[in-house]
Amino acid sequence: MGTACASSDVGQDDTRCGGGQRCAGDLVPLVISHGSQLTVTDVGPVGIGISTFTSVPGGTFTGTALGSWGALARTVGTGGETIDGFTFPQGTVVLQGANVTSGLTVNSGWLVLRGCKVASVLLNHPAGSTGGGAALYTELAAFNSVGAKDGRQPAKTICHRCYFPHSGFENVYSNNVTITESWIAVDPGSAGDHVDGIQTWGGQSSLDFSRNRLQWNGGWNSTQSGLIAMYSDGPQSGSTGYDQVSIRDNYFVIGPGGGIALHAPMGVPVTNMVVTGNRWVWDSGFGDPNYTPAVYRATGAANYKTGGNAWSNNRWVDGPYANQFLWPDNRTRTTEY
Image (cartoon, rainbow, N blue to C red; front, side, top):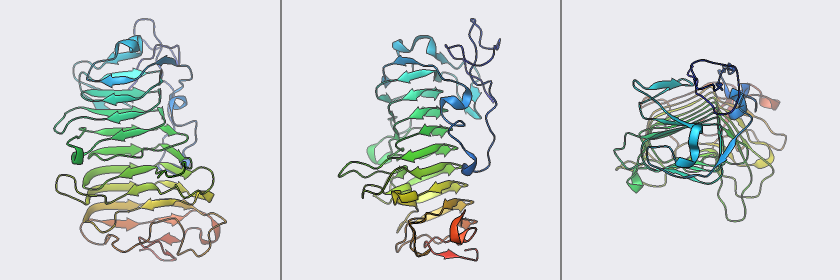
């Protein structure tokens, strides 16, 4: 696992950091196989031992560190670098230990936020860009990426071991998106709002949403939509559907929040989409097990037995139907789909 340097004295001495600094990241993070294993101490800055921050403003990133970031930022050298299991190219800027107090828009280049607190991030790269963005062990209020419908497309969008205590991604409209091992807890919205955990548009490919914990905070007020909300809102690059999608080993806590847990694609072409190993927590307010908010139920669901699609081992984790299977049409059954 890669280790990045922090300007604050966090973690153990490590001569790789140089300059008399200490390195955060010497804590060995918990290795998990399922989102149900996450706790709040495994995600966000605390997951790598960072508890003190230097406040800096956001702004527009175009490939080089903002001047106000100072020693909190460094640039990846020749040959690239692997950080927390992800490999980034030479020239990537890594910002660590920062409290970014205003919105951050990434227009070009590669930016990695590691062990930070961030108001909001927008990946806004033009189509054909080789740049992208990653948040690793970072606490966020919002993380959005643009898509082909707007003539934009980051090369990659990565969010790993992130902590969203009150909100979610809302708009992730690009291809090549990885959201893994993150804690995404969504508050009710205000009147007229439409809140989601991870929201996609459609016409997208290469999406990996795996080993996350997703939950609704508070009670139902009609603003909650989907914790994983894969909508079909229109074409991007001529496609309205989804291809190469992995939704694996997530842990859904609906509670009294009442929004849908998984809104899978409806009424559009779906290929090579694997939904497996996910678990749902039962709530005492549920009645008929075939009409819960676990999976969005409507006409036009994908056929998960053709086109490289698969739906397997998706179950209730507790309650009166513990270990029974949830099917794509939201029915609860004692047998596998």
